[in-house]
Image (cartoon, rainbow, N blue to C red; front, side, top):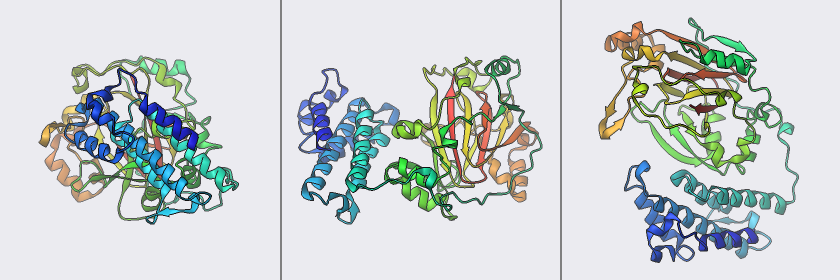
Length: 429
């Protein structure tokens, strides 16, 4: 660990001349090694002084480098203060390795860790490897997990499918190209599309022990949405360890709902990225949004590579009726989801929210709470409040493990987990 700590400090002290961090001032940068906590507090205040998209890169760089400097200091203090016994030493009642991981992961989540993603991952990976080596124990392989090493099998009742999405078995690339070239583009379920993914085979995501192993014993931090839906009153967000998320929301049938939603987990934890593969379908050039629909009027940047996001939560997690700015292939790795989809041509019947308080553009989200329609009284009230909604045509499906759902750009979709569910979305254009 000392070698990687020294080499990392050298990187922090030998900044390139065009590094945006210099905009923070040379006197500030001079404190990176000696006073990282003060710089983290300074950068934190600056991060919250702007909308996230407008935060100057220099402050994100400062928060990141100060966090790395702090983490190295933490490692040296704990290892140096307790030679030969650092692994079993707690600092103030807290596992010190968790404190190091927290420092580094907060930099990733708060800032995106510009220019430093690889360095942070190397530090965490080496710390995890060092921990295992020093303990000199044999790590249990994921496929040796005990019979109880699974997520709860309980699930919500499956809704009756009245207007099914079309399905295709082992869809070939040429067939998908033909599908995309049709004048009327529709969603499509692709069966048996993920059989080659390690996440469904030798590196199984349905085993909590495997996910804990890949997250350094559950020490990695993740952002969690707390509440049924981001459109509900009382909905909130928190940053917690993966183990806490697992224990509180996935392994216990609690009343609260926590959702790891639309998070770039695979950049943060590359070892999980190695368990999946970008579908070849994402490298076919798709058509633009339907003319005269909301997205057709917006200039959407072209993506060089597909955008990957993770979606992990218990039964009952909801993504309210909304549209995405890109074509989407939603891959179901663990559990089942119910998905309902509406064509962009139905937009006027779906009551988009528009710009809300604080200037937040919520035009991609419907005012209609589709989830509340499961209650008959709420259903009647919704139709009274949104009379055009009853006439909106839709298709629907149950997305099972190993299946993918192609969602054309601009199609409205409502998603609900009917069991513990782990999905990966691939946006592309």
